[in-house]
Image 1: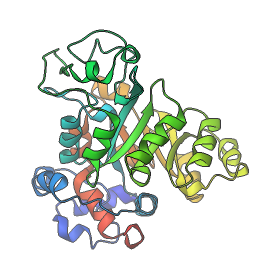
Image 2: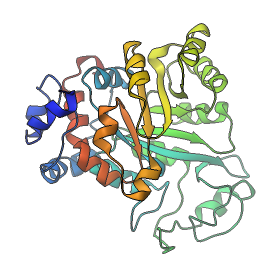
Image 3: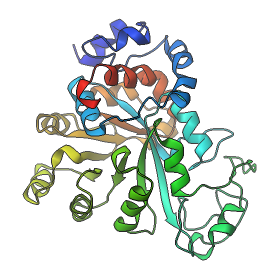
Amino acid sequence: MTSSSLLRLIAAAPLPLLGALTLAACGPRGESYEAARAETDQSAIETRWLDGVSLGSWLDCTRESGATLVQAHRGGPRPGYAENAISTFERSIEDGAVFLEMDVARTQDGVLVLMHDDTVDRTTTGTGRVDAMTLEEFQALRLVDETGQALDEAPPTFAQALAALDGIGIAQVDLKDITLDQAISGLEEGGAIDRAVLITYSLDDAIAAHRRAPELMVSAGLFSQADFDRLRENDVDLTRIVAWLGLGSGEPEFDAWLAGQGIETSFGDFRAEAAGTADYLEMSDNGAEVISVNDVEAAARALRAAQTARGVLASCQAAR
């Protein structure tokens, strides 16, 4: 019996009990989702439950207990909400997401802001390139939802987003036309080095990011033992690495090998989500400590994400 199959037997356990369970309710899941969400939706925003948490230790406990946490891709937009928006981050946190992926760009006057595309055309009321706008021009825009309806919310700066997540969520930082050094400097200025994961797209960048900020968690694409060996040979502290295994439902054998080396893994299946065929429980069973998702509510429901995250943390002495 897999850990997730075993945990289906305790799917109805209340939140306080989950913290005391050995496996900390690692995922299941099911009928008690609404009750779990009711327990956690407001407290997630109001209690700053992540203050002082050691992210690396929490992820270690997540791996050791067979649990899976949820990452909201572009913050987790859904009907009536924009991507890369603070209100969307908060809604996803209420659903049970822990990691909030955000895309960081740079204005003409050098301010880091959240925007996925080179231009603001798709996601705001304006037009034009981000890097051709001043901050004042950028924040005079209004975000739009999936129908193009304008919302009463300006696209945020990176600093505003980091401040909004302080104590309630972990920033998953994706770089759009900015350098590693600029992103890391922004994290330092926002006091968020210890509550963020920096996404890299090459082993060279992962190594450089680690050398620049050894205490920062780094997401690095690992697709073979040779990739793992390269990080180790370059004196990367592997406790600061989260392995990105790519798009799909996972690589169970390689995932298990990485777990044996003390490495947490992450992946996502956006195509399956778009087709309505995503099996979040299968992804969990295949070893993911963090699943990147577009449909936060569906993933959180399947994985009982809010209770899982709190249960793991409550039973993880090292993370406190």
